[in-house]
Length: 105
Image (cartoon, rainbow, N blue to C red; front, side):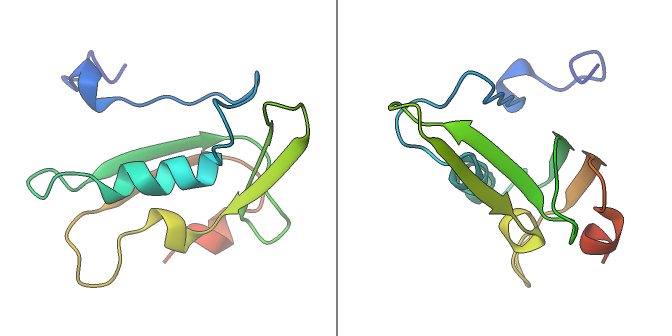
């Protein structure tokens, strides 16, 4: 649907950690790193999340590392939203419970 709307494939990033992660990489750190390197002339991002969340609305990520151990991390609004004074908007679409009160600002 994004490509049909004119978004180039190189601008679409998809992560699915069902089968684990490459190395010892936290999905939360990958998301923060990607958003942190958006070019200044294209600072906006659409973020779609489908998955579990905490009762406080934080996005709950879980994966298995290379040794098979269960790892967890949480994504907060501060991890996704640009810092005050920085250009760019984040359009959030979440299919996760309890997220509205956490992410509506």
